[in-house]
Length: 369
Ligand code: HEM
Image 1: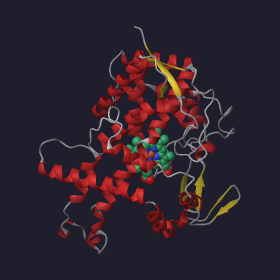
Image 2 (image 1 turned 120 degrees about the vertical axis):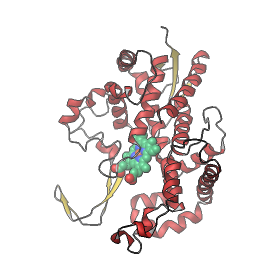
Image 3 (image 1 turned 135 degrees about the horizontal axis):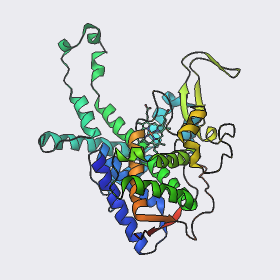
Image 4 (image 1 turned 90 degrees about the vertical axis):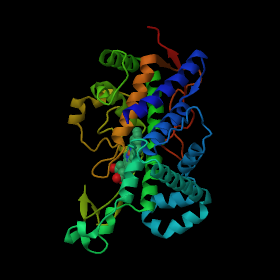
């Protein structure tokens, strides 16, 4: 996927170059949205959209629809506070969300089209993306005789292949989980780099020293420890996933509070990330909190930017790679700066607490070598 991501990052750099040459103020999220969309479309759907050059593409319009449900929607609010009502509210949700259903159908149709195209040209290209993995799994022809006796039990053997609905659900989940989260983190990270020039200088020195001007790769970004620290500290202050849920699988007592088996527990990531017991001076942006020593000294659940445990973020490595490639390519060419329109502090939206309340406006300046 490295080459696919690099191609998207090259387009990002070209677009930033135009902004730098025109000395323009930049609503920075508007630059990162199409970048992360291009990455997800190419790595998950096998589609080369160029969202950065073609913002009105129907794929982008439909993907944005998916992100729209907000905390102002009464159905979403009820589900957030009473998740166990999902099974009763599902039909209501579908009934009142015609646009949502139409959007879902759009993505199901894309899968159908891709399947047809690939069936017609099976050897044309070596398809190595999520769609192909899903198609392979869907098409897996399972002979009952190939399975062990245990697997042949009714209901069990069928689970080996994905149904069409499961394929579509997985594609849509990757899109919803992977597009805005990554774009938001890049947006906040750019803000912090612009408002903390000493951090930006330190990061640029690391990049220049390690990569000597060459393109970042999956292997080379692993040596950029300070870049990892900057990303983790950004995620601590502004985690795109503000909370996760877990269901207790057994009766348990946590600090004197009895949690019966089956209880849905809400884990408030954003609040934990600013808890002064774990994070002294919690509102301060300080990447030094994530040196290997500092991490080892802290409770491992104090940082939950990508969740934790067997159901943590499956896209973490892809997200980190695409964020690192973008930031490296940007800092190799530009200095990120504040301008008159840059907010003095970040506020977040009440209905979508992971998003900035006001656009984050910045400038980029081409580096002189
Ligand atoms: C900065 C970027 C990202 C952040 C901060 C993030 C954060 C998270 C968090 C907090 C969870 C919940 C984990 C838990 O319950 O323990 C999650 C789950 C998930 N994420 Fe991400 N994510 C990011 C990018 C991505 C990307 C790029 C993809 C896919 C392309 C992705 C796919 C998923 C999926 C499929 C799940 C559900 C996993 C499961 O339930 O087993 N995420 N993510």
